[in-house]
Image 1 (cartoon, rainbow, N blue to C red):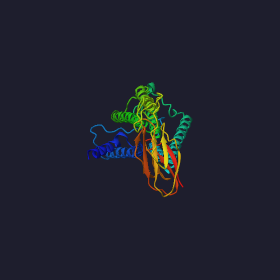
Image 2 (cartoon, helix red, strand yellow; image 1 turned 30 degrees about the vertical axis):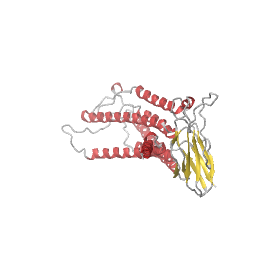
Image 3 (cartoon, rainbow, N blue to C red; image 1 turned 90 degrees about the horizontal axis):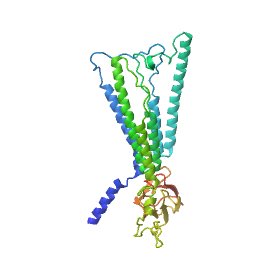
Image 4 (spheres, one colour; image 1 turned 180 degrees about the vertical axis):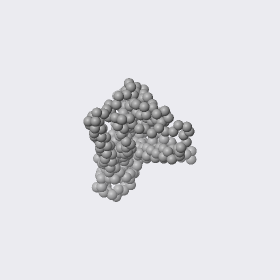
Length: 376
């Protein structure tokens, strides 16, 4: 009775100690969509309930001075963000959604590019008209010390888009590699996103001040974000270190293997000759054998008989690294998911009968580990 209770506790805690990275990656787009929905809802609520609460001096209408061209509002950044979201969603889900995400991103970027070209043509036309009428060309309005004229607030340049783009690159790379790399990629996006949100809040306060005073000095060129670059460099270095196998219990686990980690079945590292390699556990009887080593399947193509239950002997040789085998059909639907084991260890999966066809087997912890199962 006590042993059964203890086994239940261990099985429940394994969900947190050894999470299903594949399922967690699949939840990232849903989480991001939920955050975007909450932010948009909160913004709409703030605008809807703002009302004429100002006392005293009212808002000054932003009228650009002669010779200054101010571009109008645009939906292109919002559509571009939606396209990027669909692309990341397609990378996570795969299959047809990958092509849908790529198409949506391409369409939104083309729309943004068309608007930019139209704006450029407008500025060129304004330059020609101003020159012919002996006016000051647009974009060449003289201002004291390069500052905008009274009544015009121009946001200072920012490194935030570049930093968020780097963080998104780390996140997508983490989705591919899995494990610690995914965690560090998410941290990078969180750090840069919070910094961008802080800058946006500061800019909003500056615009409110410009509404009251009619003028606001710009901050000039921004300083290089050395601290943020250092944080991103540390995150990248930490992810590379933990996925390189140089540390014990990291993904490759080569250091742990060399240190003499015990093998499943009671064996110890190193043979009678004093070798430092971990001996492979003994193989049980099974119809098919699949081995995981160095974060990859040794057997990338296996076969089985149709409509008959069969056994897969799964050998995990990566010391301290969790692996398993999950079987998906052609559409990506999961038909079977084996228990996750931490190497070195061996287990046997009882796979239910499957009809004839071609399937994919994948590691739930490391989605880059894949193989083909042929039922014939």
